[in-house]
Length: 294
Ligand code: AMP
Image 1 (cartoon, rainbow, N blue to C red):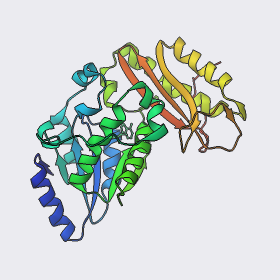
Image 2 (image 1 turned 60 degrees about the horizontal axis):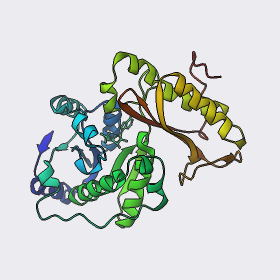
Image 3 (image 1 turned 135 degrees about the vertical axis):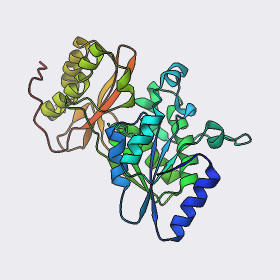
């Protein structure tokens, strides 16, 4: 695996592979890698495709400076994991390389309704920061295929919109969420959970499974109220737990039994904010044994 820190060097290596008929597959990350990240990389490893991963903790997308300060950094371990996974290139830029002096921030991205709900309303400016770094990374790497995780459902929609705004021909591949054995979605932030919070953290997944198993045509409030109560009882401070249209994220108060819907959750376990989601209208899975929500 090549580790490249400079934009100029990266663009030269990518151009030479392109000239040799390779496509470019790109997996952007903020590091502290886990199996979820590596699953994106394995999707990117295709014949005649150069796999490029980036690690860059983007200050522009942290609306809370304390969250940025506390973001885990495990770069040596990340390099070992990427090497083992067969990654071709790791792009590891500095902040100055991504946002050089003289680089001016583009005009705000028109993200429309997407920026007004869920992560958009809870973390003002977050998606503008995501778009800023993604536009920059996309213009540097120039991928044919971009791999991102459904774990960040709304982010995938935002990046899809950014690709449209950029008139990019790059294909976005949304990859399934990888989970721990107890259902907790893998996340770099999980390593900040203490033993007690880690045990309870699976409650988000259980609440989503409960919604998936119990959703019926009619008003969505009653089942959401039960799921929220379950989170309360497990010491979560819930930011949001909602059912929304899976294609637009418009909240769904009344489900007609046909509309594709997703449940989205963000909740704090002590000082760690966790997010997760589940498409409720995909094939239903049986609820985990031992999960009791009433
Ligand atoms: P991050 O490093 O948190 O910015 O994540 C980098 C990419 O990995 C994003 O596209 C995430 O959606 C994806 N990702 C994070 N957690 C998971 C997971 N548990 N399963 C699959 N993809 C994930």
